[in-house]
Length: 349
Image (tube, rainbow, N blue to C red; front, side, top):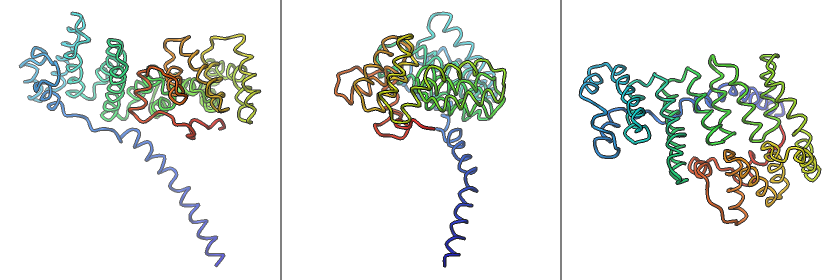
């Protein structure tokens, strides 16, 4: 009987090892292929003609429609793309009709990468700053992200749009947990060397010091002359790792003392403040964490992570605060970290 149990356990363990590569493959497929199906271009036109957008009649001329219906979709896409340039030169680039023309181009010629990149950038950056409404800004962020995901579904074997999506999440959303997934997807294909370092940059800003060091270590193994990765590793080990190691050991007061010692010399260091706020959260000192995230957000208008974290903690502490576009975006996409979640509480490797 005992022999059967031993054999059974051995078979179970063998099966786990056997399905691990399959599980990784499935995760990759979900990342790349588990996306919303692209919208047929004629449905976009139908919605436009139905009054759902401000698509100008002069935007889609009879010649362009004829080219599209006649099988010359790439030609029609090029003609529409020139039309969008015309809108920009006339100062109408931020109008809805320009956006929908750009969107039509992506659907007419979905393997042309430039329109996907420019359309997503237009949404997440240009239209974002055209309004002061945080909810609308969050909507533009989400539309930009979804545009790039749709572009990836058409072009899953090239690094470009993975990188563009990762960068949008890194630079504009400040979702440092999600961005590395797309950078790593880009790394599956021929890509510039700097893409590898972006993974480390994201984890460093999160902050997740062990994963940042692992990412930079990969860069140095791939290219021992990568001075950016070497410098980042030295900086992390000198400035942040002592406090992080103390926090891993549960010595939160000593950890805070260590990071405060660094901040005495560099009081406006955003990364130093991120580490301090993170340790304060781990220690259960939520008010200190809130004050630190708020300080980091006030010191840099572009530190959207700190501003979002401050909003999250303010809501937990019952402090009145205005929501930020990034916080609304994370709520809409189900990305807001909850208290006690593994991602939030994990300090160790």
